[in-house]
Amino acid sequence: MPLSSVRSAVEQLLLPAECLICHGLLNPRDATRIVCPLCRQRWRAVRPPWCERCGQPEPHFGPCRLCAEWPAPLTSVRSAVWLDGGARQAVHGLKYGGLPRIADDLAAAMGKVRPETDGPSVLIPIPLAKKRLRERGYNQSEKLARALARQWRIPVLLDVLVRTRETPTQTALTPGTRLANVAGAFATANVEWRTPNVQFRNSVFEIRRSTFILVDDVFTTGATLAEAARALAQAGASRVMGVTFARAAIPDFT
Ligand SMILES: [Zn+2]
Ligand SMILES: [Zn+2]
Image (cartoon, rainbow, N blue to C red; front, side):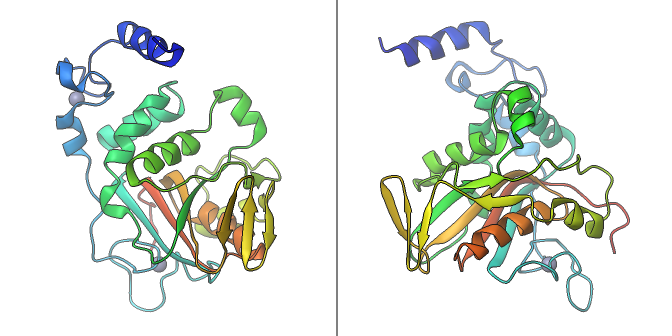
């Protein structure tokens, strides 16, 4: 038996076979899951009408305030569910509960937000600051991107996008201050961008034809995705999209 399957068998013995959210017993055929099918069905999908670009429902008249300042290559961002109830608990489990395997459950809920692209596409997780990575032991967006890569059968590019500085925690900031908060926080690395191609380790992508899909766990104002897209655009990417598992409601945002 390979070590990895021994490890996952041991992990299954150690993990309680109950749903993280409702604590109901998991059906043996769902034993590799963290969240039961019922709780996954209860996650509240983000639905249209929404701003075609940022995916924020019920845009007000006039230009959308949320995405007006985004860099031009970032054309579409979608989130699967609202960050409330069980979905909030699931994100918490991914982030702080030390349950990276829950990423598969979150990715399964993101089928409807898979971008339609012509030409090749690659997934790029939003990187964590080094300090936070050390504390957590893993990057939750990378876990999510890897799970999406398995389900969507497209590659994931790691270490291409890096944090250049730590950013203060983004809670309770207005859209404007959030954007200032992450300004210049990302850069590209470990990759040779030579128009029209990008060479990453053993893979070569044609920049112009490729769609770079940014992956994050939660969308709040889109400031992080916009700033990451700006770094990719500066390196030559012309098509950037974004997907997140959850979307946080912004209080008093009109
Ligand atoms: Zn449940
Ligand atoms: Zn918008």
